[in-house]
Image (tube, rainbow, N blue to C red; front, side):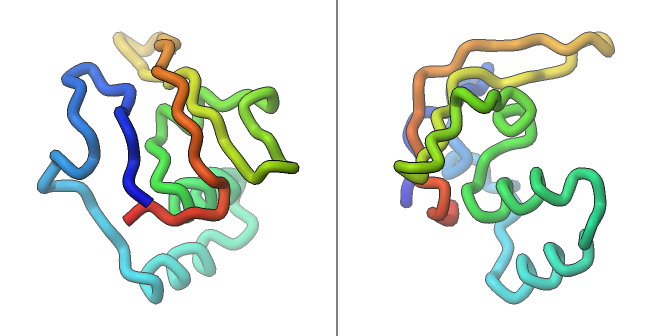
Length: 102
């Protein structure tokens, strides 16, 4: 699945970033196995399986997750500026919860 517009200050998408890290399936599996019961393990699973960015995951609310339709709506992202969280509204982006970012 290709991502639609991202919530970034420059308006670029992850496909525009040549430095973006992409993991192969085995690497992702090994990474997720290594985090085990860590406090942030659910965020790592979400990032690995959807390609969501850290700020997009931090900005999620339960109202953004539709378990029945298996969709996650990205409506805001959280960034930290001068040690203070800042919430930014994003263009509503729907992503199947089971789809892996490529």
